[in-house]
Length: 370
Image (cartoon, rainbow, N blue to C red; front, side):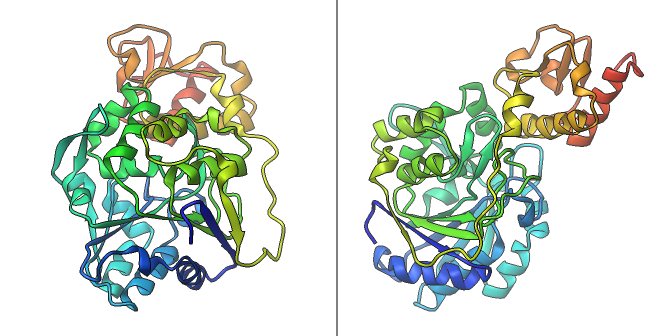
């Protein structure tokens, strides 16, 4: 497999599909030694079933582990951290990674509990978890899905799971794109296996799965994300961190350089979304440096209100994000807006709390919301 190739396979037996993909990619030849410490990094952003479209399917990771163990690689670990506001251990249990760990004897390392150091990542100091830096070879296993702030999330953004929670918050205060690009310089991805089974094209937290039943493999994380932009109907320029990462030497950002090779063809044509819910819903929000969990819970809550015909009654912009700390206003979400006249407390508040708060506000049932 060449570095510019992106391989794809379709089907329903995700574990065997993954193993076939890795055989075709000749992954073992990319790993320098059998003694290498190999990290497998799924996306467990929150405690949600893989069928919901947010988290990496455990059978994909099982396929990677079996492929490696069958070829004599034994020093394997899984490592990840959920977004701020959720505990990784809850996602591990709900998604079946605890059972995966027991079955294969592969430890799962919770990066929310890991120590960290600061590294110079091509001119930007970033905190990176120690266990991530101990790896000799990193296999990234992201979900191809949408994101309410960066439009897409796949290979590059998935590395945020290898930094401490405090740094995740700082990423949002810096606007996400630039630190994500610099993180690509600080953490080298050696191989990428993309879970394109049923990722949600609107929300990173899932809920609107787009069934593709496809798994892809790539060697260049920047080219991978550029190609994902193409698949999801975006221009690469719509996701600034891709070009930024390319300029830092992390990979190629021209999706047309990708050599897409399908190992088989899908039995059924996928039904792709005609529009993105996120675009319309974002018009109701004024967002400044918000964290993914807070914003990610707000958008589905707005979708519920829209479906109930209530969102049209909203006259005020909903403010959210660290940029509103210490400021006053009418309507806010999260602890950062606690000086607003009406705000929903929490860091982050849950989707249900936000929904009930906004519904009460719109129906005029509540006078205070803090």
